[in-house]
Amino acid sequence: MKTIINGIQLAYTDEGQGTPLVFLHAFPLSQVMWRPQMHALVNSYRIITVDLRGHGESDAQLWNFTINDYADDIISLLDHLNIAQAVFIGLSMGGYLLFSLYKNFPDRVKALVLADTRAQADSQEGKDGRQAMAQLAHKEGASAIADVMLPKLLAPFTIHQCPEIVDQVRAMILQTPTEGIIVDLMAMAARPDSTDLLSKITCPTLVIVGENDVATPVAESHYIAERIADSTLVTIPEAGHLSNFEQPAAFNEALRNFLTTHRL
Ligand code: MLT
Image (cartoon, rainbow, N blue to C red):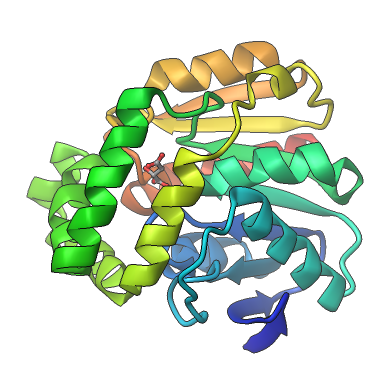
C-alpha cells in the first residue's frame, strides 16, 4: 500500500489484527527485512512495516532530512491508520528513530524493541566515515555500498553458510536509491546523543543483539539495557547485525516471549 505522508509517498504494509506492532528497518534496507517477523506474527498481531523515505518503494528526495523527520513520518502514518499506541520494533537505524519517537511522542509507545542499535551519537571518526560513504554512494552507487555493508550487516556464519540471505540483503541495498543512502548518512551523522534518554524510558523494553554484531557490538546493547529500568536483554547466537533476518526463529521467539510476558 502507498500513501502520501508529509509530502512524500510512503510504501507500507498493514496486515493482521490485534496489538499493532510497527517495524522500522535498518540502513540501507527496506521493509522487506521484516518479512520473517510478518510471517511469524501476523496471525496474532496487527503488523505494520514501512519503507522509510528514500527506501524500497517509497519516494526519495535529496534534502537534509533528520532522524526526527523520519520518526515524524511514522507518527503521521499511524495517524493515517488510526493507531493511537503501538509496540515499536527498530533495528539499528530503526532504533535511532525509536529514540526520537520516544522522546517526542512517548504517549504513542506501548513498548519498545531496540535491536542491534546504539544510544550514543556518532564520534568524529564515525561522522568522517559517513561522509566518505556518501561520496562512494554518489560516485559509484548502491552496489559499491552493498560491497561495504554486507560484511558489516551479516555474521561470517551467514556469509559462508546462507547465500540466499546474502542475496536478499544485497537486493534490498540495490533497491535503495542513491539519494536515500546519502540522506540516511547525513541524518545519522547529525543525530543527537540519546544516552540521557535511556533512564527516562519507562515502558517495557526488549533489547536484542546478534552475538557477532560488529556494527553495534553486544556491549552497546548491555549499555542500553543497564540504563532502561524495565528492560530485558537477549543475545542471538550465530547472528551479526541483522539478527532478525539471519536467525529469525531465535529473534521471533525472543519477541514472542516479550510480548506474551508483558501481555501486549
Ligand atoms: C544500520 O544498520 O542501520 C546502520 O548500521 C546504522 C549505522 O550505520 O549507524
